[in-house]
Amino acid sequence: MPGDDRAGADALFERRGDRLVPTDLSRGPWSPDALHGGPVAGLVTWAVEPFLDPGPGVPHGRHLARLTVDLLRPVPLAPLAVRAQVARPGRRLQVVDVTVEADRGLVASARAVCVGRLGPDDGAPDPSTDDPTERPPDVERFAAVALPAPWPVPVFHADAIEARPMVGGFGMPGRGSAWIRLRYPVVAGEPLTALQRLATLSDFASGLSSEVTVHGHTFINADITVSAIRPAVGQWIALTARSHYGEPGSAVALASVWDRHGRVGAISQSLVIGRPG
Figure 1: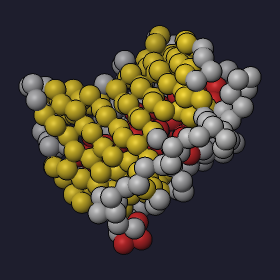
Figure 2 (figure 1 turned 180 degrees about the vertical axis):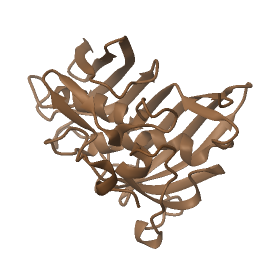
Figure 3 (figure 1 turned 120 degrees about the vertical axis):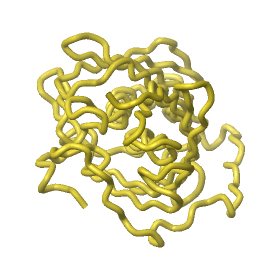
């Protein structure tokens, strides 16, 4: 698989003063000068995580229950200013808004819904039990595949991840499922967290389940929504995805998210369908 020698970087973003600079590993499939949506979602999550720490009234910290990232225009492979602030303070429910700006202005925005965790003596209900027939087979049963790289330079989906398809696959029309692993941290010199990993891999639902091919159409997502019931455990995340097409030019990709221990949450993406050129 493409990897370290081709990339020449060890993270998706690097700090440069008060800016975050994308590396080649963040590049997307639609333009050599624009980012993949996954690294954008991972960077937004990195900005939200400090608001999840324990504090007054929330001794057990907060859980990131939902993250919605609006990709307002192509996010350039250029220095980015990322700012997060509390839009709705609260002990049980807090909302954090994030903006991502390039030199030309706002390129992405996000809203995170953060829920205060209950303590061991607060009487939380037991976790739900999944139907074992729905759980994906173990990752070791499947082989890694090299994903197509559209440019002669590194791209996120070919160089920054490892993918092991289970049903269908990237570039194969129809529903699909795969185990995916992120091979690099989001920000250089900082540990990759479970939430960053989940958010960064969330943009693969549409590519895994598109009903059209990149040779005949584009299927660019305008947003990414991740709903999480718990942090994912381990390096591998499984997506079981399907895209649904309705009004001409419009579709939605939906995916369930799993780890080795069971269900983690769900992903939805609004798709804009077009023809290349």
